[in-house]
Image (cartoon, rainbow, N blue to C red; front, side, top):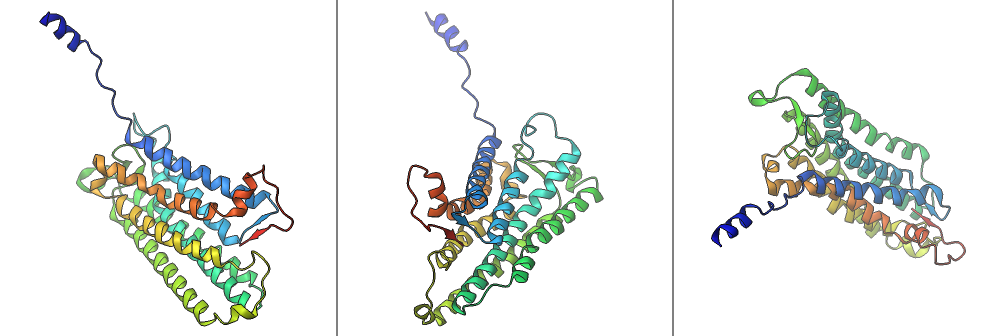
Length: 301
């Protein structure tokens, strides 16, 4: 009888192994990507939804962010990915947080321009808005090429490890050097600080001009004050998330099981943008096709 029990125990199948760490990471990034695309399509195709140029700039920056971190999809386990792909993705993931923070700063600047011009009954300068659109691509190019040159200038990192390699858990490729991390960190902190300073300045400006609200008659949806409140919420969630990403990308704690869970929080940046700006009623109304829309229901921010 004991022998039968022993054979039954030894013949039992082993417990299922947990999924690789990159599965949850990919699912969160893909979810954010789908939500961002879903919120941008109505603004592109629907006449009932209009958005500022820097709004599109911020959404595109977040889409690039998601694509950068899932570029290794299908090559996150098994043999090491090709060196060229690994270097390219490494450059993208260091540039992505800086790009999103720069796009957020440009977005806050245009919001202030529109708020102040509305109170002054003036039009926003198209030239100023066009200049703002160059900030995030410039930040992306600088950080990207710094990372690429760092990866190609030396074959080995500290302690003889490859200068570019796939991270523990197979989440993404990174560079074993403090140079791109430092450049990304300085760029992110700079733009986040400027963003917060601009938001505080806007709050002070609105408080001082609060008497002007009574004398200005505004069509529905043209005064983006609710959007400014959403932007402050994004700064608190997404801004802190951007800084967290920069800290974690090369943290030694990221190689542990708990570190993998924390690295999943990298998706908080695009997810915060999708949830904060995608939950506006004019965007949701496009997908609520079963509801009739009244005349003149146009959201403009």
